[in-house]
Image (cartoon, rainbow, N blue to C red):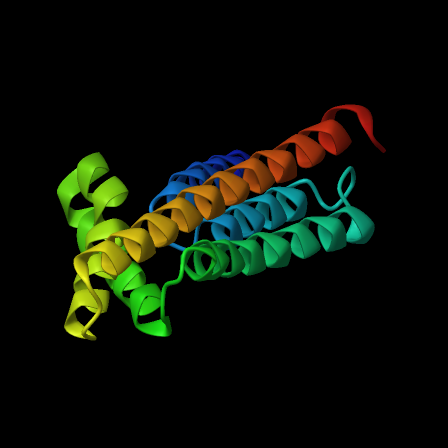
Length: 163
């Protein structure tokens, strides 16, 4: 049996899981994509994708992680949210993932609003904070997904056309 095929299949499954994880906030999506691509490069004996490309892919994974946190925090802060709203949005996203797409979309908003209301803010202030946190989570998720697909594209380009 050729183990290389099994390694490639496993790498592909990890990458697909990472792409899903880029949308589901509780999974380490982009690091999984990087791990799958690293496994695929190893399975290829680093013949087509070497240290330079893997360093670039690793840098993109770190960038995606930073953007995810910054987008959520900046979105909430831009509309007057407190630190409490940021953590409420994060908790709401975590709980929301158990309720499918509606939970993923509404969880951060509800979490931020509840957190702000529990801190004594008015409904209007809490709503603005919730909207900002939600918008930040959406922008952060879009950025993570775009970077994850960019990583896959760079890898595919190097694998198919590079040497």
